[in-house]
Image (cartoon, rainbow, N blue to C red; front, side, top):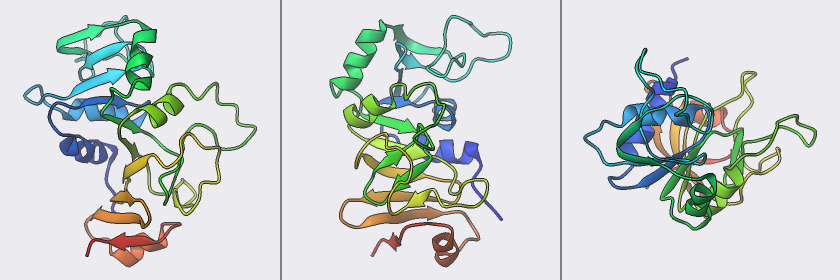
Amino acid sequence: MASFSRTDMAAKAAADIPEGWVVNLGIGMPTLIADQVPLTREVIFQSENGVLGMGPAPEKGQENPWLINAGKQMVTLRPGGSICHHADSFAMIRGGHIDLCVLGGFEVAENGDLANWATSENDTAPAVGGAMDLGAGAKRLWVVMDHTTKDGRPKIVERCGYPLTSLGSVSRVYTSLAVLDVVQGLGFVVRDIVPGMSLEELQSKSGAKLHTRS
């Protein structure tokens, strides 16, 4: 079955970010988005550990072990980038100064709820990190994730079954099979489908009703 690769998903999300936005990238797949934005575009990537103006992953041999993102991956600084205190970084997040946050996800519900940090009440995940702050504080929240689990269960659902990260905050989802808008009062609206897949096939792999734009 054809699917969008992780690079494809990151590129699609990167292309949709408007010029001048301040964007936080969550751990995992979202960090690939920074690699898809050329220096000719003005997108200011923020990392909650205190990086503003984060660039793509460094070239081999050019790594700086002291310059990392929130996932402990080595990154670069774009021209004009800066380092700030952790508290200042969270002041940006909690103060509503982040235009967009892109997170990974375990499940997204049709009302925009996100579950992305634990898969049960007894999960051994070390902590939720800054995801709850970002879900509540960022002006917009997008999610990048596979469309289904490894055993084929839908991650696009009517209601999340996992512990929630944020309530009603997701406005767009980029999956391995589609790009979906989350429209309040309606649910998932299809923007794009992987080539060769019909809407009916996509619906069969989703746990919530999908709508098309009229």
